[in-house]
Image (tube, rainbow, N blue to C red; front, top):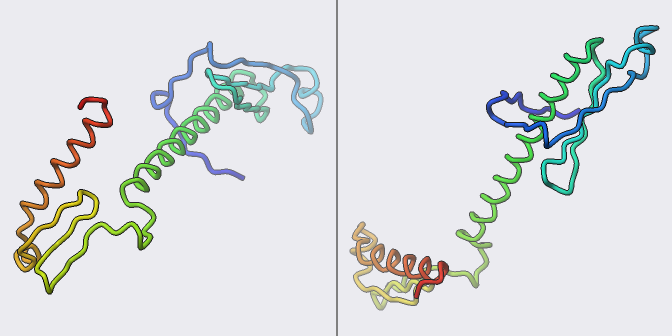
Amino acid sequence: MAVLPKVEETDIELRSDDYRVDVFRAQGHGGQGVNTTDSAVRIVYRGGTPEEIVVTCQDGRSQLKNKEQALSVLRAKLYAREQAKRQKELGESRLAQVGTGERAEKIRTYNFPQDRITDHRIGQSFSNLPGVLAGDLTRIIEALSIYDNAERLKAAGIN
């Protein structure tokens, strides 16, 4: 059993070009009404991707209600897929920012005997270690922002 979020129609927009609706006779218990009416609905969603999402609904006796319910389930599945995609992207960017935490990925070294802080990401050293520990971070923050801006320009292809 899967628990899917209830998604409003405004959250996920479905175009009729993105899915195909098939109607067929319901299977299983239900007596003569099941065998004589095409009330079951199958929606096959392609949406421009190679993978399909298939949703089938045959709970009610009304084809229209079954279609509405199937579309609701389809919206929930699409919403869950979007959320998973966002979480994956967020996790990748977070990992790129934080790193793996290995010892070789050191960020800063605080050298108390020589009154020096070395930031290994930007390759720069700063003095006045007691002042930095007391909260005077302006020189370090400025150097980091200059380095970050330079990296962003380099990634954008601007030299």
